[in-house]
Image 1 (cartoon, helix red, strand yellow):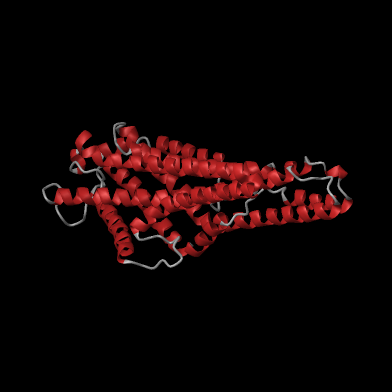
Image 2 (tube, rainbow, N blue to C red):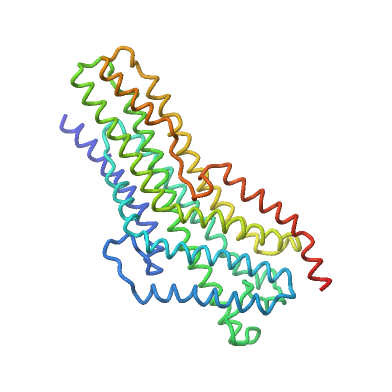
Amino acid sequence: MVSYLSMAQKQFHQMDQGLDRIIAFLRRPLKLLGLDVLDSNWKLTPLTIVTISMFILQHYSSAWFLMTHLDSFVLFTECFSTSGVGLEIAIRMGLLLYHRELLNETIEIIKNQKRSEAFIQLSNEFNKIVSVSVHMIAVIYMSTMIFELTPIVYPDPNKSNLPLAIYIPHIPHDVAPYWHLNYVYHTVLNFVCVMFLVAVDGTLVLSILAAVYQIKGLKLCLQELDTGAEQTVLHRELVRICQTHQSIKQFIRLLEQTYYLDLLIDFGLVCLILCMGLNVIAVDIMQPIGFYLISVAFQLFLLCSCGNLLLIESDSLSNCVYSIDWHVMPLPEQKMLMFMIANAQKPQVLSGIFMPLIMSSFMSPLSHSIYLDVWYGSMPFWYEKN
């Protein structure tokens, strides 16, 4: 018996270590940028000021570049698209700092989830799914660093053979050492964007999947419920299940309160970025901005697929409650199940105010981007004529 308990404790310890490794992986980029708000003692540091200053310079550089390149459709739209990425990160950076207390509360709830012997396999599955998702995010986002090789493999004289369609304002950009200074600025800026998005989107995916697997755990409790047990024991177990259901709903409300503005920014700016980027690709399919578009589309796909899992699991919860042998239970316990079924009728869905986080919302920005791309398809010719 002692060895059995020690084995279970060892498995719980391994699960905790796996979750701690995932959280540490997500905190590493934030520490690098001076934005580790998951640390309860976080304070503003010089590194934080440097990171914020880089994005202030990026927006000023973009505005200056747009005003001086109105005659070039490709450069204008490429700069507009990359500016959308910068704007998304700047806004989400502000939201990260503003919601840091809610975010810390979310992470604490995930780390302190109740576990039992029956949930060992489910918890292991959760850790594996989250680990794969987070590392996939890192790989896809880091692939955009290939963008920095464009001066070598696909030099563009219109951009002075620089990776991005922006320059540091008021200094030369096509002669040494200023060309090298602009190149270093582009590389560091891209790296900062990637690190920030890996941490923020990875934390969002972790939070959504935690809600999904909490619902799966609740279903497991219902399936293992001994409906023929003594009434006192059965009542106590049903009370615990109902309390767990309420805590899951509160956790999902906390997620929506924390992330609804992030999701609104994602949906709004992703559509803009895809639209402007597709215009660039339509003119010249060899444009390296395609790396950005793949990363942006993957970002929206992963978030919507996780949100869709939450919808599916929560939508089937009432059927799971009804499928147990409720007809052999005493009348008071049957009434408890009726209230739980009624309480589970509305599926739990995260939303960005206007659009729910489901797969149909992933298709909507893509279809709108393609429509706008076709609608603006004559714009390159308009620029050429004028």
